[in-house]
Amino acid sequence: MQRFPCPFCGPRDETEFHFAAEAGKTRPEPAGEGGAERWAEYLHLKKNPKGPTREIWVHTTCGEFFLMERDTLTHQVAGSSALGVQS
Amino acid sequence: MTRRYSAFSLFREGLRGHTGWQPAWRSPDPKPAYDAVIIGGGGHGLATAYYLAKNHGMRNVAVIEKGWLGGGNTGRNTTTIRSNYFYPESVALYDFALKLYEGLGRELNYNIMFSQRGVVTVAHSEAEMEIAARIVNAMQINGTDAELLGPDAVFDKAPLLNRGPKARYPVFGGVWQGRAGGARHDAVAWGYARAADGFGVDIIQNCEVTGFIVENGRCAGVETSRGSIRAGAVGLAVAGHSGVLAEKAGFALPIQSYSLQAMVSEPVKPCLDTVVLYLGTGTYLFQSDKGEIVVGGGLDRVPSYAQRGNPPMQRTVLSGMLEMFPSFGQLKMLRQWAGNVDVVPDSSPIIGPSPLPGLFLNCGWGTGGFKSITAGGWLMAHLIATGSHHEISRPFDLDRFATGRLVDEAAGSGIAH
Image (cartoon, each protein chain N blue to C red):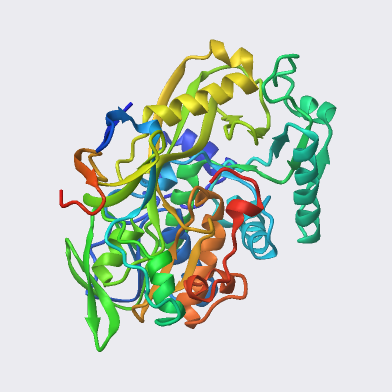
């Protein structure tokens, strides 16, 4: 069992966490502009990197969303931080 | 010299001390240019090359594989073949694949050990039985075989299932597809490789694609660890690594890679002659021809390229097995492994042109790539040879993510993806 660091609760079992999305996406604003392609990109397209990545996760126990930097090949976690805070 | 496999050739070679067998395929050096290059020497890539040669007469074709043939997901799945899907588009696709499997061993002159032992998806309440009836109706309307079973019929198919009064997931009945089954995974890859090689296709192993040659906005070949190879068209069949190759080609895909794990027990005497899936546990099992109980379940919930499973899902899958077959608690597990799978938002594959002209996609099969090898190869060959969709692959084009016309099997078929 791997442990992930919740910035609010500390290290907890991986089963308490849920992957939400890749970090760094911006919602098309205003919503009516940009068209279907831009929305498809925002909603569905993923960088899906092999190696270091920045992701938004939710700790389902405390309900907080946060940023986690980890590696998709080694599963090593480099760190996590509250959203809006530079890590 | 023996090229064709048969009982007679086996007997004859037995008398000669097995000195006449030939390698099943050549290992040529890559040529500087081909009419088509397929990236990925798994089932889908090899099948694509085979159908390019057989259906479309394109024989100046190469399959380029980073490692060895069938060493990715073709060698890491649980070999179940079925077409019990909900939407007409999906049944058209997966039933086409199943029909091709039905004649494949004879066509390839290779024993793929295809065994149509049936799949039963077990429901655990009156409400789930209504959903099961709906799926059966949908499958029948879509033209594939399906039958709604009551509890007695399910126990007939799998007598060791949990009948205890305290069962957490009691058996109320299930969905039966009798034509479903399994095949030997290596044999499917090797059979296609041998047959494609027979048509003159070059199969190049230990050759990694490091980039794409782009000229005038069009894909004109690939850069590899063994030099540049030019191509009239390039096909991408690299399940699990589709995003990695897409990035090299300069675009992103609606794919997230996850690990999907499976495990087998020690071999035991025959005790289970069908594939059983519980809606309640998400675990499915069957017994291999060697006697091992093969167990699989859902995805690890952590995006990953690690090709190894995490312990929490292993525990979930095995606890599901114990609920379904309490007597299997005596089994010792032998091996556990995982593959990377391409997970798409609607749990349906992506077949079609990529954003880079001249490069074609066959990816996004999620947890069901093995059963669709035949159709995936056939449809991608059609795409590469004609430049346009076969009617079966049209709904699975990448454009569905912009048009919103998704084929959402995650919600439709009630199968753990």
